[in-house]
Image 1 (cartoon, rainbow, N blue to C red):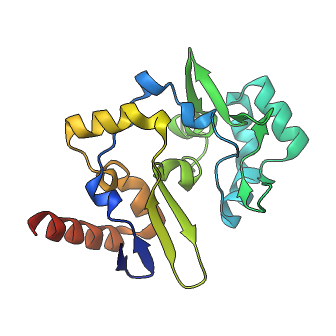
Image 2 (image 1 turned 90 degrees about the vertical axis):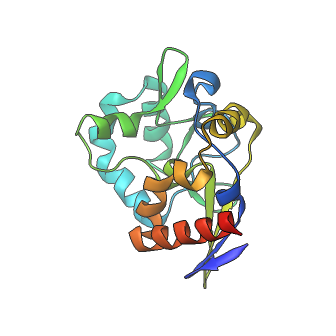
Image 3 (image 1 turned 60 degrees about the horizontal axis):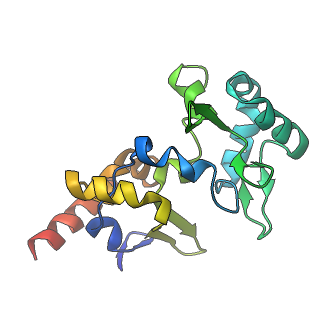
Length: 189
């Protein structure tokens, strides 16, 4: 672990390798698990605002879940998250054949909304836990991502480089440049 500004970072994000392999996992992270995607307070308002524009991209089951539960929910632990369909799929998930995709991201890709998706999804496999004085930045190892770990190793792409855009979105360009310096120092030591 090391500190960068007001973040405490696991060295795993510098040392482990990862590249999503959708052809292998079929987007399992959007349909497996026991909770929706983590959200922050600002994102709940964004979801409420963009839902009418995203709705045409969603499946009937997702629309029904959102209209019954809301654009976001409080999970069993009190955290804010996306609603689920039958306690399984994220309500915003759509499918291209057998592959799960994000309906919000599809709307974003078509220029309908200007918000890509929840930052927690964009950051994955990094998970950020906010505390009063700092944020913990950790690598989340999940067996459904074994193929992503293998592909990352084959392509020699560390986690932090794979999620560069998302890290900049969450922490800013200056923070990311400092992270790259730490990574280079670690590599040279």
